[in-house]
Image (cartoon, rainbow, N blue to C red; front, side, top):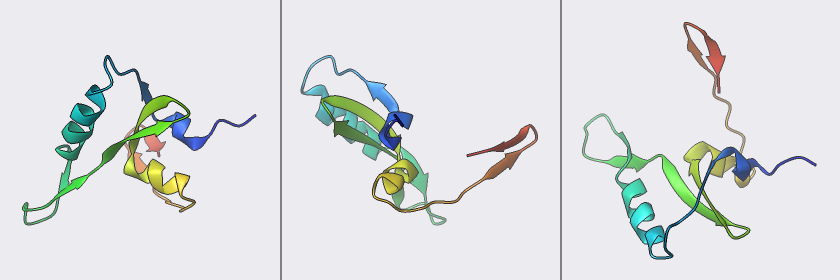
Length: 81
């Protein structure tokens, strides 16, 4: 059986239920800025699925919705997704 694509994310265990809001707010402060530096684009999101929490990159969330995102990055050691 193929694993759902959200399992590519990082599964986390919350120490207490109210930790969800703290993590969610923290992730909104992590991201990339536009060229002028006055706007922040969130890159990671928290997902609750099947009684588990996952941290996913925004491209993985697009994949969950059925969007195709083709992106290959090249480094000196080769290509990675």
